[in-house]
Image (cartoon, rainbow, N blue to C red; front, side):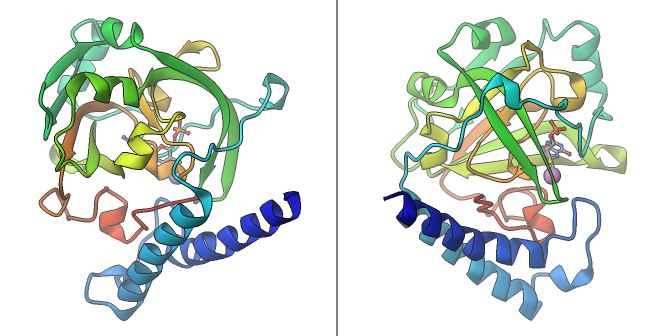
Length: 261
Ligand SMILES: Nc1nc2c(c(=O)[nH]1)N[C@H]1C(S)=C(S)[C@@H](COP(=O)(O)O)O[C@H]1N2
Ligand SMILES: [Mo]
């Protein structure tokens, strides 16, 4: 049994990280070979689809990412990507300690919702010690606490047509407030036990550098899927109409949509 687990893990690593390392030089550097008509990109997209299906098939919908003990936390969670959103509305909310911040939940739901941070913090929560893996080649083990996304979904009641949850963030990735960061996950990951809207890191309120007031934890995927500065959730049937249409800011630059570890 454990022998099978090990070889399965090796196989998964080969299937997913192999294509990932080809596509992903790092969070900052990109080349034009990732334009949508390039052969390389088309090949990567086919590999992406394959690794998603293979992982779902072999790993199962509910499989848990590895969890660690407090003794395994050896360094602070390294802030990466945007660490201080250049956005007026965000900075106004920050000045007020996020007292006026609201998480909007809209799209294909029966009961659209607007939640304060206090309300979110009173929802069913989970605390977990997990490892964050960034494609730039670093990892960090940290304790995350947050509301279970599944509990929130039980309140808003997704329509039968909803296939993805889109996370809209506060931080613009281009000058002049353009291209806010965004991400998306499917309903299997959305209802997964370890998928959290996290508001605490290593027992402290989530620092600004790590995504205050809340950031997504989606533990079976790579770092760029873990959207920080989340302002709005949108349930959709397709993300083709959002930004570049690939389901996330880095996906629009050529990263894989399913970033299984
Ligand atoms: N809104 C937003 N979310 C983001 C990013 C970002 O730049 N903006 N960077 C991503 C990347 S590449 C990584 S590795 C992690 C970094 O999270 P950390 O700063 O807590 O280490 O956040 C992800 N989520
Ligand atoms: Mo990353």
